Amino acid sequence: MAHHPRSIVPSRRTPLSGSQRTLATAQLVSAIGDGAYYTSSALYFTRIVGLSPTRLGLGLAVAWAIGSVAGVPLGHLADRRGPRGTAAALAFVTAAVVASFLVVDDFLPFLVAACLYATAQSGLGAARQALVGGLVPEGERTAALARLQATLNAGLAVGAALGGVALTVGTRAAFLAAFTLTALGFLATGLILLRLPAVLPATVAATVAVGGSAGGAGVDGTTARKGRDGGFAVLADRRYAVVTLVNTVLLLRMPLLSLVIPLWIADRAPQLGWLGSALFVLNTVGVTLLQVRTARAVTGLPSAARAVRQAGAVLLASCAVFALSAAPVPVWAMAALLVGGAVLQVFGEMKQSAGSWQIAFDLAPADRLGQYQGFFGTGVAVARTAGPLLLTTLLLDGGGPGWLVLGVLFLAAGCAMGPAVRYAERDRSSWLTPAPATAPLTPIG
Image 1 (cartoon, rainbow, N blue to C red):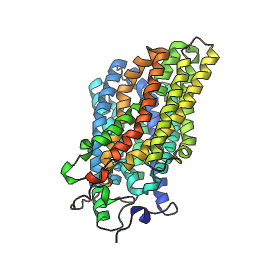
Image 2 (image 1 turned 90 degrees about the horizontal axis):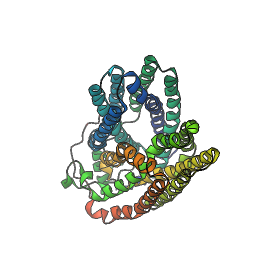
Image 3 (image 1 turned 90 degrees about the vertical axis):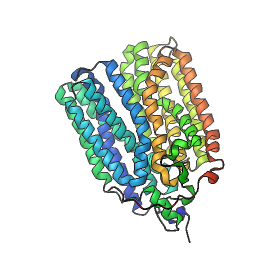
Image 4 (image 1 turned 180 degrees about the vertical axis):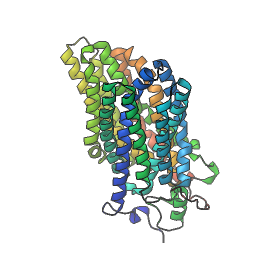
């Protein structure tokens, strides 16, 4: 007799907790490398390699545009061949690509390497999510992802500090040392991921669950996508696409602290130039300390949609406070407004993240976790690609009214998530049926 997945998954006291610690260690190591890379890469490619800012921006836009479509096929690979080996392989590819940056000396090699980097990163994100789905019980995934997000921010802070050393020294050797650290970080990440227990390919695990065997954690055969939709079922899932689109609008918050706010400060109060970095640190520390606590309120789709709706309202309030900084106020008042807006933004970000994790998993068929997470993750690539151009135009040119327009957009997206989730849930059992039995594939790793 088949058991419901929740009755067979390990508890928090089982060795699965060790798997979560290993996932967190891999996240920390790769995040340290990422922090060093993101902090130092722009100046390295412009000052040392000699690329113009325009060419650098064009190359990164093209790279992330390509990366945005790579998540689905690479996530599908994780579903078919197993997420552990796929994630480790993509971590090794990322390490090799970053190492290639050490010898890049012109735009074309940079463009090729950047495209490979964005592709590997998008695929690695999808495979990691599928790995969480395979190792962590269904009811614990959002909490686990919150811990991973907190770990990510801690690692980014450490990496950014190390990258800052390279910026301070400013020599080619210092920049190359930061890149070497990044490459070694991803190499270590791949090795750490290989220490995790092997996870059955999702398609095989779903079939095992349908057959009544106690297969992988959180696998439910009733949620396997009909075979008639072919390999990339997510591309035919319009309902999931609507949810992904709504989430992508909320992800436009991503370029604010890293790009828009520093430019905003430089334009209106150059003497506060240091505040841009301080606000980024504030955001990082806030997520590190509070993301897990914020995620505790999210336990299912209704609470997840509610968290996203609250995030939209908080992000509107944040934008309204930022808009006030456009007024002719004393420097100290502008600084206070920017800090207040940043504090509100970090709370909105944590609520949106927690809600979106739950939604992304709960609406995805168990035998398609990788490709569905890859598709949902395209929102990050879109925000990185289109967000800078859209937001610099809207906010730097639009001033206070532009901030209010962005805030209303966040609120509208937050309120739209609930109906979008209910639409995605509607009659889902009628088009999600047990997957046809397939020959098991040998997992990678």
